[in-house]
Image (cartoon, rainbow, N blue to C red; front, top):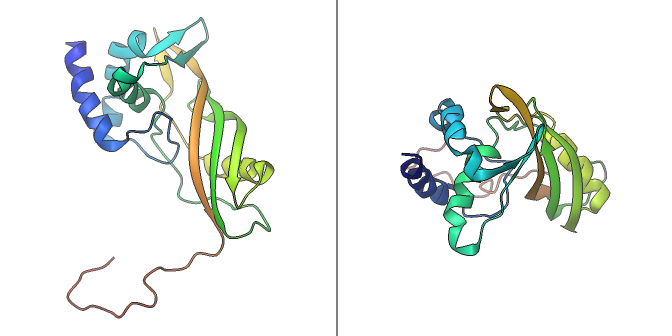
Length: 182
């Protein structure tokens, strides 16, 4: 039964994201979030390596990337991502690819963010400030194993940050009355 659920979730996870790194800017859909604890109870021993107070995601060989995607969907996909955050002051416009690590504490909050690399418009310090603001309201469903809240450690993340003044990409396009636009 648990393998059947993993296969179904694997197909869904691959259609959502094929990245081997946890994404902090994608939310769980409401159906998945509602059934999260049930799926986690069935898969935590498959997906996680645990001690008394913390767990970390298992590493998977290349041929099992589908299993890895399911585990990341269940254990390191936020249930809420805020759409509002502050960009660091005096950052030049551009794009920055930020690689970082973090933990998800027992309350489901991102803590201990450490920037591994920042390539682009922002340096490592600016990237850290950006991530702190971006993740301050991000919320995960707390991980419960045997009714005990557990911290998820050693999570790797990757995020592409766009900085600078926001401009509507369609501002110079003529209005097309035949297309409904929100």
